[in-house]
Length: 539
Figure 1 (cartoon, helix red, strand yellow):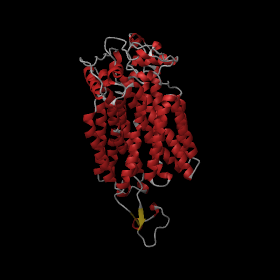
Figure 2 (tube, rainbow, N blue to C red):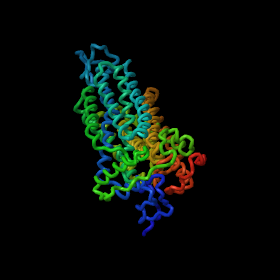
Figure 3 (tube, helix red, strand yellow):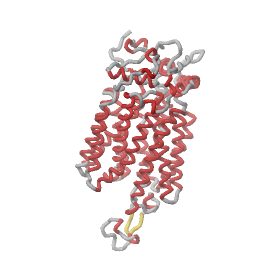
Figure 4 (cartoon, one colour):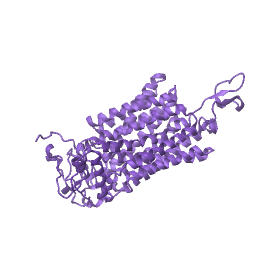
């Protein structure tokens, strides 16, 4: 058979103990299991389920659609907390045009129920309360990302995702029902907690049943639902202008998604195998194979190989800390997430200052994000994860720095360039992170990084406040932070063409191999050594 000169390992991701040695990989033998004691999930998908069939695509679309109600809950404050229109009520008009310099009997809100600002008069001396509510949302996001990340690894991806959606929906319902600011303030924490967990659980759930060669492409494609949600919520906000009615729409949308999608989704077979439920994992894979129109053998699909490595059951992110290579990855990705969050939400919160319609600005930002996702999808495959991320962070940094010294339409254009870079970077770090860590801590690692990212979201409004000192200062901070994240990326390993591992042992062994540019799938014999004998060398 024809032998490939360069093997793209990601195209045939196998679990840690699959036994396929890619140093002597032959394309014609690529689907043959190397051992007779059962198949790995990846081998079974390749041989009997299919890399991406109708059932997997349906599962992917249904799971990824959870990003739409999530973006509704995350960014609805753009409209529910906006500065509403007001008008003068005096015959001679208002002098100066500054609402804070006028007497209360000189003006009135065009619509008292347009936003929380108008309903509770959160203006002038009380304006800080709105920013405080946004910070409380990201504080909730902070805790939700970490806790639900652990929950997704210990209890399952599907329960974690729906738990998060229910929590966010309940918080949104409370916010729509309260009659004063402080109950609203605390409800934002509940909403943030729910939103923090959805992305972590749904992303992993959506990509794990998919064949290796499609996983990276569709992993980035999940964010199209986020950008589409921004467009949809802007269009809906044009028609629903009262903040309570708009929040109710968000609640109903979230509940409708949960009711419709829950019966259609199965748990991740990789998680079921790691959790010691191979029979259930085989049932899920069999259902996928049938949905794809595959022919099932008379005796059913071959049994799955059980993981016997001692660390296979570990779910705590602390498990990576004793290993320098994985520890470096965790710290580096946490910082990169922090910067991405601060810059992305900083630019998002600043959309209104670009001038023009807030609805149009939101839609344009979303369209720019869609283009950036398409670029990232192509670049991660052609150029690789590491260099793509470095380029995007450079674009974001340059866009922020230049926009700090421009005005008018030029500033809007350059700000959108920065939005292009940071949106694509924020998108691809999810994929990159899942490839840098093994299955047993994948959701926990993603949850930890997302947790740290919320710190960036919390301080983003405070960075924007620096414009009271100098209009250019926030953009300089965002640009400098992006440059620093670009530098930190140089310490990460390239994962294009490298096998995703299931265990801590496998990831450490792989890090040792990749440190010498020796990319290959480790065989089962490589893991016979106990974890205590693993070299503790910094790679």
